[in-house]
Amino acid sequence: MIKNYTIAVAMIFTNFASISLAASPNLPLADALREEGRTLEALDLYNQALVDFQQNHDYNGILAALSGRLISWQHLFNHEEDRVYAILARKEAEAILAIAQEHNIHDKDLLIHFLLGKSCIFLKDFKCAEMEFTQTVALCPQDSAEKGDLLTHLGEAIYKNGRPEEGERMILEGVQQIQTHQEGRDPFTMNVWISGAYIRLAKILMSDQKMEQANIYLSKAEEIILKNPKLVIRKQQLDILKKKIKQ
Image (cartoon, rainbow, N blue to C red; front, top):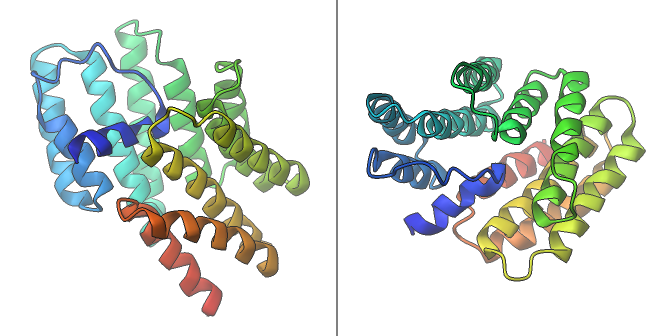
């Protein structure tokens, strides 16, 4: 199970191959707990992992642990929509950038722009989000499932930045690219990316009172989520949106 959930961290699809997990077995455990919805337990383990990696001067490990904490704040933000969690996520992204610069880590630019873009979305700074996600797409020039996921995030930023038709098209283009390149890939990760794209699209359509269209994409997300019981976080997001529609 831990292997599957660790693969799910590929939502930010950055290779931390240089990490010595022997330095901190807490990292994969934290990733697993986070994706099971056990966020507070995960945060405790990420903190332990940070100390472990620092003692070994493993700065790639530190970036991975901080990324895990950011995703944990994201999960809490999605659940409670409290701006405090958005601020915490932003600070994690800024810490990742500062540590990468301090230690001359230059192969994590895509990760850094992606996480900064996510934090901009949480804080409703959509101009910033579009700029950051545009840079992530530029850093991923070849068509791939990963690039498809990036396009869905960029599409959300474009939509919220005042160009809804262009944004919706880009989200759907991203979904199509994920589906086109998913053969041979981990099914769990592909399901996470596609269902997440549909949920984001449904959510922004709901905010524009386009309920009929929103329901179409919510149904597409639900079909994927109900087939895979491991999509715990996606199920929580789905339930929250369905409750909002009924209000």
